[in-house]
Length: 460
Image (cartoon, rainbow, N blue to C red):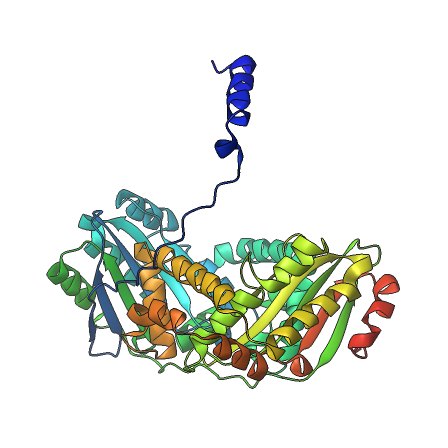
């Protein structure tokens, strides 16, 4: 056992050696490696369904993911979370298998089936042993094409969603985000994050079936396979399982027209010791040639631990523990947002510092050294985030959704290092414009209204 006495002796030895006692400078980071995209094969079935096969890795496993472009963007104003409820019910079995039989089948393959609904699409897939890849394709096709939609489970699933809704609406971060999105997208599904309890309780089995029938089909679907697999057996399984799936309606993702006007909104939370801040605006989307430069600009400004806003209001001022910014993208749409939970009595001061950092970047380009550190960070994160089968599929799906072309991923790191200080300043000037920002604060109005006076008139 390592005793306290031995620990003391070790500490004394270190203190007795000046060279060891001094802080050591770590060696400089080596050049970041590019992300090597595995060679992929693309083909389409006769019904319009797209397929991408990607041999990847040495582990004998394969990830199969079906992407159907029918998510929240397909919901009308009176259908918020209807696609989520449809997804819940799709996991309750098919016309030939119970939910337990589906789960047992994929478990025997070495994985678990996951179905999630996003802004633009519904995702259904699993990661299993390579030998089970063709069987997984058949199982995914069964779940996607032949959902049972059992009426007996609807009340339970609606109750589960109702509990999730109650919990979500009790969180100030969700409150602020919902208002922020509603202001940016007042007449678009992207602006509708939560249903009312009455809306959720009123959904019927007929509405769910109709949503499915309207939105699910081969023409809106793309199947991705990544990992170790027999290419011929996999293609045969795909054609057998999906070849006769009716095409249905073509993909139709509604492009929004977001609001880009300075406005201030406050959600009153009497007695709150913190204010939750959401402030941001619409920016260019991933199809724009400046997208990578925008990502670099965001990482430098607020989107990394070493960013300027984080260094200011977290490290220097101590106003908040976890501020961060990010660029959120959907089909032909994106917004930049800075978020932070700040102490109530420094709500106004926090806004002043955030706007100050934005103005500083718009006025002066960053130094080469500062920018290079951010570029090293961003390129390293990119490569690490693409080191799994599912990550490769996610990246390929991102490229396909935004029409970025086959070279985008392999050239990403190079493009990151191609961003100059002048590019960052230009992006800050043209995209991160304080005059066009929506500001949402969830906090105690009795203590923050006066602090917010310099930033505009609070909207009703």
